[in-house]
Image (cartoon, rainbow, N blue to C red):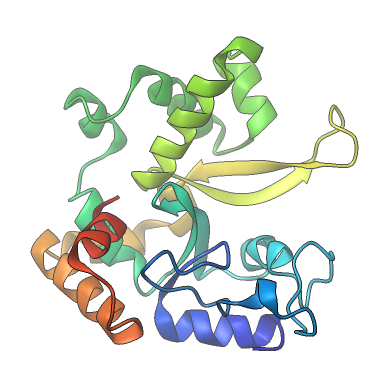
Length: 224
């Protein structure tokens, strides 16, 4: 792999990938071992959009409409393509809305505050979520946990970034609901896939990508 184009080709062929450069026992489209290869064209945190994987996560959101990026695997970042998203939706949500999951006790009240703020605004940066939903500095741990919980449940996803004037030159991540990100088609497709078939399909693809993946890891990867 030499650049962003190679990464996109690998990701589209795979359908999903860990996002941080490590396979975590499953699969990563970014070649494992980049850390030990200083002469590799793939180098993190250089801000080169062609060869820096840190830049790729936002390029896919800015330039494409068929790849989602968020904390979706093992509470870590990962990519899922539009082709495979319905299978993960079926496996994790089983047709349930956020409010269904909340009523069933699967989502916290803190998560509900975040979700409602984002849902009402359609897209919202992290600082604005905190402001609108009333989170202060002392709430950081609970906020971060709930935001990850919402991403793992496939209820919220990253949809870009915006300049954050309160934090120097850093950009703030912007979130939206997965329904807003994908539109209706992905969810209609998910409704026609049973959770059992979804798990079976994803498991088969994981073993195709990594024949050494173990059952316990596979199950956690799929179900969150």
